[in-house]
Length: 193
Image (cartoon, rainbow, N blue to C red):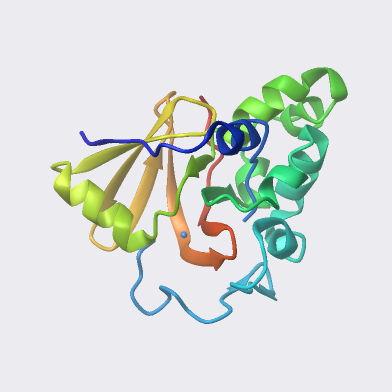
């Protein structure tokens, strides 16, 4: 396994920790680095930040609502840079009934923030970068999240998979959605620390 960490100034770490919930995929060459790729029916502009793009994706309304409830909007709009593994509405719908409604309550803000920041890694890791880390790691790589716990990245063919601390695996469905403050990889599952 490869352990990858990024050193950053205290102010950036503090902002990132207070931060990131996800906002809006697999290293498919044709889709990689597409100019203004479509996510949730809306073009994602590399000149806009994570929040500015996420609010337009019809596939990420639950994520956006969670980010707002956790108070992470300013963090996700900050310079970063961040790599965000962004679950879709369908990914949230796989959670047990009532989970999302419970998490967005003010009394559960700390838990929600922990889950959201577990989807964020400091620095920019494109699909190509992730594939290289996996190859260099002999089949898997670990990335330390803003939350503090690691995610395990694996690949099969041209697909990337992200496994959380509980052993659940999500597939990257859209990779390399470049943002002015990082990159988003859309995933089909919610990761839990």
